[in-house]
Length: 121
Image 1 (cartoon, rainbow, N blue to C red):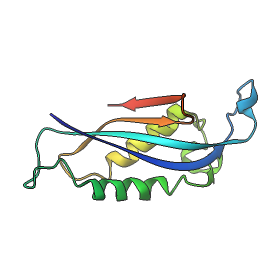
Image 2 (cartoon, one colour):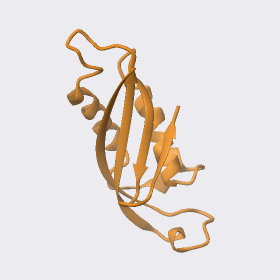
Image 3 (tube, one colour):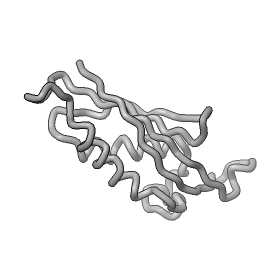
Image 4 (cartoon, rainbow, N blue to C red):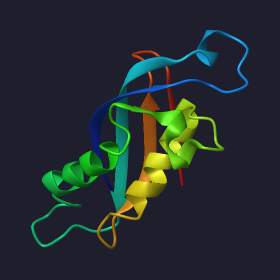
C-alpha cells in the first residue's frame, strides 16, 4: 500500500453552539489540514496521483470554507463546526473528487498549532 501525504490551509471563523466556554463566542482560526491518501498501486509514471492535481482539488474544496463563517454553511447548519466535523467534511468531500483507485485514508484538521482532530475510514 502506498501513502501520499500533503498539507493545505484555510482561514475561517466559527462558534460552537451549546458550548459552555469561550469557544461559544465567535472566533477564528488559521486552519491546517493534513491529508493522507492511499493506493495499492502506482500509475504508469510511478505515482499514486500527481501532487499538483490533488492539491488543486483540495484547494478548490477548501475555498468553500476559506474566509467564511462556518456556522452559516449548509454542512454545519445542524452539525457543530467543531474541528472533528471539519475533518470529517473534508474527508467526505475529498473522497468524492479523487481519481479511481485513490482513497482518502485520513484527514486531520488543526485549529491551532497544538490542537487537531482526525477522521479516517
